[in-house]
Amino acid sequence: MSTVAKGYGLKINRAGMAICPFHAEKTPSAKIYPDGFHCFGCGVHADVIGFTQRLFGLARPIDAARKLNDDFLLHLDVDGGASPAQVSEYRRRQHEREKYERWENEAWLMLCSYYKLLREWREMVPDCPDDEPDRRFIYALHNLHHAEYLCEEFINADEDGRKMMRSEVERIAGFLGGLTAD
Image 1 (cartoon, rainbow, N blue to C red):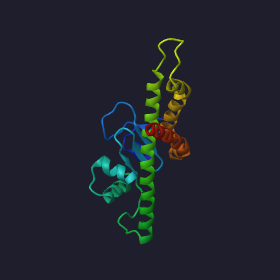
Image 2 (tube, rainbow, N blue to C red):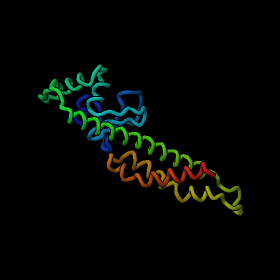
Image 3 (cartoon, rainbow, N blue to C red):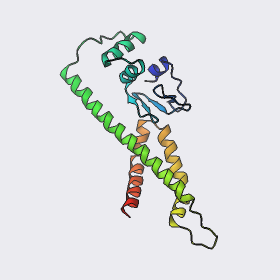
Image 4 (cartoon, rainbow, N blue to C red):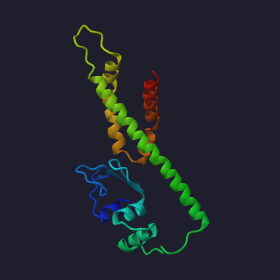
């Protein structure tokens, strides 16, 4: 994917981030993965064919495949048909990809909500040194740096790195869910 993104003019930094070509922005919010593109700003997610199709406003995925074939001299027979097994496997992989993308978006929102909440709690400073501090203030002092670290790691990690964070995200989801139950 990075070869295609670079070939079509995206400048990718060391963290794999780039300015999204699908919305106006000044700082990179798009992550380039080995097998796809995801923008945390506008939510666009696509594989290399979907990215090319969207970038050039092409009507059909086959048109994007042809463009990639021509632009990158791939010499593929893009007009040949796929077998039922290939179609089935493609659909299975696509379903798994969509399932992961939903989790990734939910996880990012969860981490951001957690971080924002802790920043709010950190502001609950006691009025005077003799006052008993609010337990949320104490919690924020102990956990705010970790929440910031998790957000930064999530942004900079690849898909496998994000998947490794699943248990931590689930712990935070449980914590936030417990707050709404109170």
